[in-house]
Length: 98
Image (cartoon, rainbow, N blue to C red; front, side):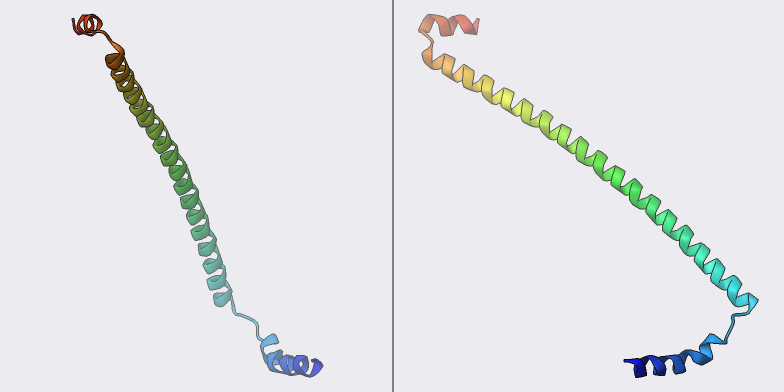
């Protein structure tokens, strides 16, 4: 294992002595700054997308509840009418029609 480390050190030794010039440092700093700005914008976009998803889910849930509630009311009223008609006498059913 130490032989591999020694070989690696020998390979990297010439690179340790190299220092970047000012232009390379400026390019690197600009690239890092651009990456940070891009990540911040992407993060803001992800948060905005998440809020939109939550809002759409909530609206969909509310609409679904309202539709289900309306359907259940219609079914219960039609069932009640059906039960009433089956149990009604001739006079009572005609009385309801007036």
